Image (tube, rainbow over all chains, first blue to last red; front, side):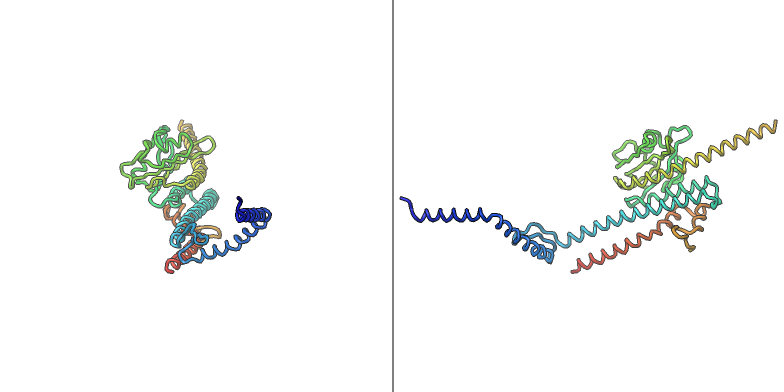
Length: 282
Length: 59
């Protein structure tokens, strides 16, 4: 026999279910309204917490970040940002100074010889670059040009090298990092010289250099040499450093092209003078 | 010290000294880079950060 109480309960449940189905959209809206009201209260509570930033929903803690950790992270990020901005500022300042000095050097205002002015401008680039690279520490920088027979690269202008090393240095083409950059006309970045066989260590160098970046100095179809920079730390150079170096390599290309033009004019002039002297003595 | 022209990092006299070989490239670069005015502003911001971090740690 059927129990009348059971029938009543089933009927009640069915009634509740029917009511819930009918009013489902209204109920969903009500739940949403409650959430909207409760959310800001929860957030305000968490941000006001003495311990730091905690993400809680009621008694349930979803995550926690103490003030110490947060401020340390923020401080570190700001310092990194400041370093990047400082370097960028120095690059802009150096590039502006170089442009201004180039204009001065080849104007009538400069009393010095143009080839001397070119040397001074190249020396400015080579001395400025180590200061504007990302990694702090000791850097050497050099403009390398091919030797007369074209088999190796020699120093044109250098910063941070010993005088004796500068004169003796010969980097074979292409069996050296700089030589590879010269031959391929592509930037060559040796991230760790300890792992690379193309690295030529000088016997009298001051520091063990671990990173080396070589940028070819190209103007049109001609490669005039290589802009070479070293750092004591491995993987010391960033993508920004490479861009800065390439920017200055273009300026160097203009300067070396002018220098080469002046030299050929001078050589032509001296050969004319020699032949004229020969004619007059006959 | 001689005053630099408007928009120039160093004075004409400093530049003349460098081009004539009286001043080394290293000294010239130091002189040029020390005129980074924007860096002074950035340093001010970093000092503020230091103060805030110090205050936050103290409390």
